[in-house]
Image (cartoon, rainbow, N blue to C red; front, side):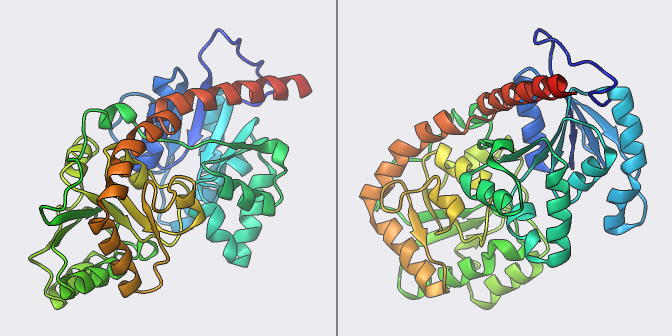
Length: 372
């Protein structure tokens, strides 16, 4: 429904939110679960399928059209939205589902910037035009962090239409797990939970591990993930004779992840770019020392030499040097162990932050209704 055909709901009722997004994607699932647990009536329109119970899922038709599926799904999305009659429509990822939302014509509309859609996609001229078009048709644009808000601003979104707040992680899932207090009496246990995709530069991390091995540093490395580069990643581990110190547990479910993280000491990620990394927040929540790329996304959460280490990631040797420093510096590891869990609980609780988003959406619905 649009605001011209259906009056806004009263504040006493649950806010009904229609989310256009990939329901099979973990980040979308967690976002929608947070909204539902915070009291919203959530309906997801998705080209994908998933077995979820905390909110309603409405499938969009899938044809063998590749990226054109987004355009082909617009008529079905309009029909579903007419039946659902949401108070607000939110598109998760500005590029694909944001296009469906922009062309479906329902308002008020929220475009939710999520990372690569606002930071990397606009580097291509055609995608930049698409992103600008989709953002211009939203009454509100959200960003997980200030650097994403600045990127949206550079694409024409005025500050009055921006709302900046981290999505967060399900704190209750991680609250019962803590990694051991720092020690140098055993080999350091490193872990990376990023997928095997080019942007995450897992192969650079493996080459850094080879440097650590060559210099005599005692460690193990867990690469918990899957992805398109997995055959190349596994081949590189074999070629560098690192199979004895690097293990591949594969995909790790939400329920198993906190316990796995708590079996390690140092979290490592050399991702080129991020919105706000849930993987980083998860590692911080259980007390691991983060060693991550020095970029805007990570500087929001990490002060180097205080609660983690920031690496330039210009070469495997430079990464290895920072990791080695983190392994040896018990003081910075101890500060991370003490400081990071309460920091994440306070600023990145997905349910608490979902409640803040719901409150902002209510204001949007009321303001849009007053203008109509």
